[in-house]
Length: 228
Image (spheres, rainbow, N blue to C red):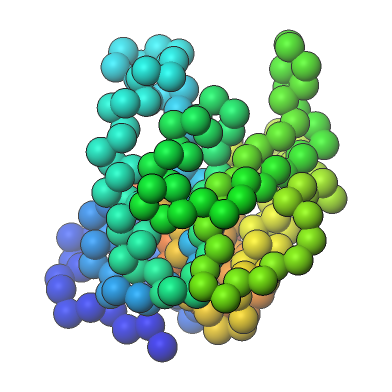
């Protein structure tokens, strides 16, 4: 059973729900308050790299170097809070994969790359219909099936409450593939709360972290609706 550590969490706004907790704060600060070996699975979708630049303009691969210390610290925290059996699903795209993979593999060990075929997407140089997921398999994990997910369609623009929102069905598939009911699911880039909703529907517990106050409140509202 997950228990909160004795350290002071009063600096972060947080909301308790029957199935878990949503934090409004910087994930690198909040995750350091979690106990070691307290998480059964991580499913998270970080900001893709085009905004991570020195001048706020369209980025290139070299601009990602400013994020390396952050992700090195974060992946080390992933390793600390995960139980040995925990699986990790880390979303990225073709532009950031080459940056994330060496760090992810060095610290956590990458066992596969999953490909989500969204079945639709924009693009002028062929349609952009795939997203990638770096996958770490926990000790004893034996997940069948293919690494191509092609039966879950992306949102239409009118159905989103977050620009990079993932379907609950996709997150729920990963959670149910990797964990048993009652497991603790962590999402450090919570966005609009799809991971928490998927955890509730799967009978799992959740810890969600989101820095943006607006999306934090959106997540809380979605969870209120889900529990109703």
